[in-house]
Length: 156
Image (cartoon, rainbow, N blue to C red; front, side):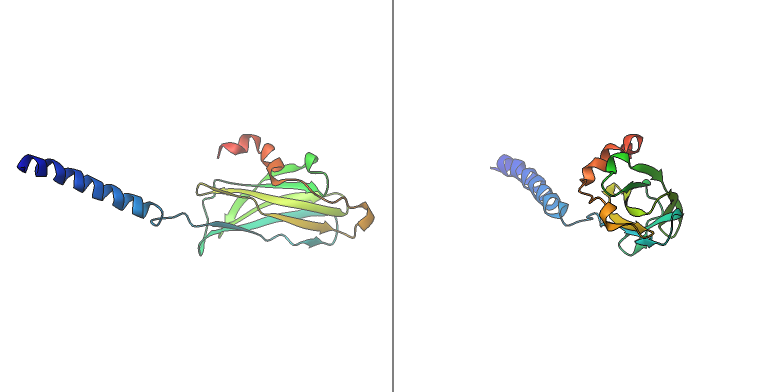
């Protein structure tokens, strides 16, 4: 009987430890969402240089150590000819890059952001100048299309 109790006690202790880990696995240190807010205005009066800007936060703190922020820029309806522009950290969780819009039109920017083992891809439309509404093609591209262009950037 003593041998049986001697074997049962360690097994019960192991079982108790295992159930505590299982119970706390989903409630412990969960990853807090990384939020990317695009700061670039939705309307630009004329063609030319534009600063692409986004603020990256997690909880109430600025993310100063994002692995990567890459802006994908394309004219509405023409994602197949998008351009990838790597951003630089400028401080306070802000990541910026510059691009030039040569023609009036409706463009989209998507901030492909990898930070703290998460990937976020917010998208925003930008109207440049006063484009003729009849000339603007609708954009029905899938966000996965931009991931194909990440190329060397996808390793982060």
